[in-house]
Image (cartoon, rainbow, N blue to C red; front, side, top):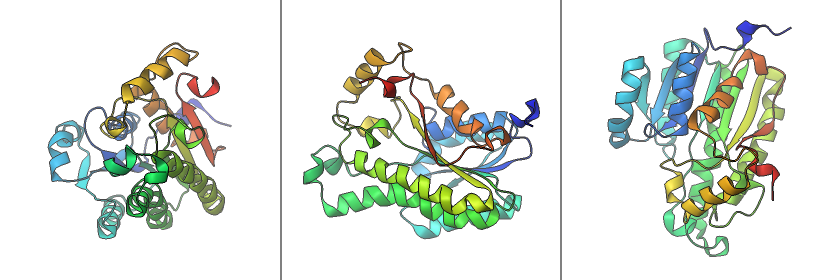
Length: 258
């Protein structure tokens, strides 16, 4: 049976990808995982991003590295570094999404093949690549978490190209859960309501999207970074050991209302 002690990450070793600044979901997850007792290696895109992220991670003693998902060698180096440091991995949180603005702001049917492919590689297939690199080192099982959005399931105005990409990501989660389940690895997509992050700022008419969610959410408000982080880190704990293959919403209930 589960006990109160299951609701922590004491002794767990984790990898969190996608830190950008104090508003990023990846940072919220890393901060919460650290508070719950986890040891972490975390990543940001570049040295430019490091300037915003290092003041957050350094006081907590997190090992911060740069990693460009579009460079396979970067991802392998990041995982190998974490494994060298910890000897194993217990959870991975993938919070990375990107599409070229010219494709993101246009109609899906007008998107370029190259732009669509790059958005799919960065936002979706990179999670599969990450899983392939990490799974051999998750010898005690564990959790893999990625971030999605309601636009994967519904046609959300102005979400455009990222809708089909996130739909592919949610399907990928289910297949990864099937394939990695025998190893004791659980896989989930967390679907937050809209919050203002660097990635979200690239979405056209994002303010209107925020207002729409605020108007229809049963809880009458938007969700916070802390609420998203709480769910994500819970899924990495032993308390969530019976769950896998799900898309789980944390959006004040707005997904349930047309």
